[in-house]
Image 1 (cartoon, rainbow, N blue to C red):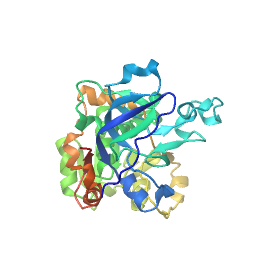
Image 2 (image 1 turned 135 degrees about the vertical axis):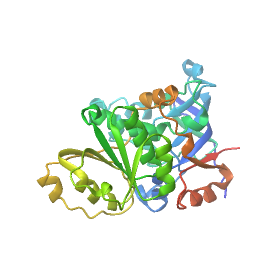
Image 3 (image 1 turned 90 degrees about the vertical axis):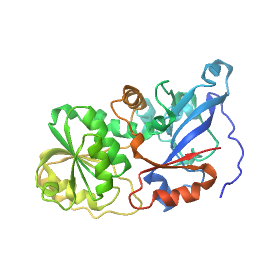
Length: 318
C-alpha cells in the first residue's frame, strides 16, 4: 500500500533527487524484523536524477543522474565543529551519523529523497540505471579491497550465494585472486558460474576443507556461516565479515585465537571505484535482477524478495 508523504525539504548544500530505481536488500528485510529499530522510509540502494538544489552555486547538478553515499556525517549535516571520527577522515563512523533508510533519515523507497550534495556521485553516461542501482552494494564489496591487500592472496573464498556475496565474488575476481563461492542454492551458484566464478555446494568436501584459504569472506547473512569461515581459513589468514542480521550469533572464539586469524568487519565502501568497475564493464550486475515492481507494490515486492531463489528485486516509482 502506497502512503502519501511530503516532498523532503532541503537544507543548505542539499539536493532533491527523483528516484529512478531502488533496490531491496537483506538489510531492508532485517530492519523490518527490528534491526536498528528504524521507523521511516526504507531503501538505501538507488539511482536517480537531481531535480532541485538548495543553493544556486550547485545548479550544475540539476538534471544529473546520480547515486549517493548513504552515511550522512558532520559536514553534510551542517555541523561546523566536526566529531572525532570526521576529523580522522572516517565519516562513515561519524558520531552524529544518520544513514539513508537505516538510521534517522528517510530512504529511497519513495519518489524523492534528499541528501547532501557532497554525498552524491555522478553516474557515467555508459552505465544504465539497471546497473547503477547496484553501486552501493558494489561499493560495499570494494571496501574489502580497501581493507585487505587482495593481490597477496592467490585464492579467496566467498561463503554465501546471495546478492552481496555474488557482487563480492565478482569484485574480487576482477581484482586478481581466483575465487571460490560456497553456497546452498544451485540456481544462484549457476549465476556465479556464468560470471566465470568457480563454485561448490555447501555440503561438499571441497567446501569444508580445513585451512584451505588465506582469505575468506563470510557473506551468508546468517549466523551459521561464521563457524565454516573459521574452519576453512588457514592459520594467520584473514576472515572478512560482511553479514548483518537481526539477532545474536553463537561464536566459538578458540579458532580465532589458536589459528591467529585476522578478523575484519566490513561495511560501507567507496563509490568511485564501484562506479569505475561498472563503467568498465568488468562486472555486470544486471543478471542478478529477478524482478522490477512499481513502487506502489513495495509490500508485495519485499515479500517476493524473501522467496527462495530470488535475487535482486527493484522498485520503480511511476
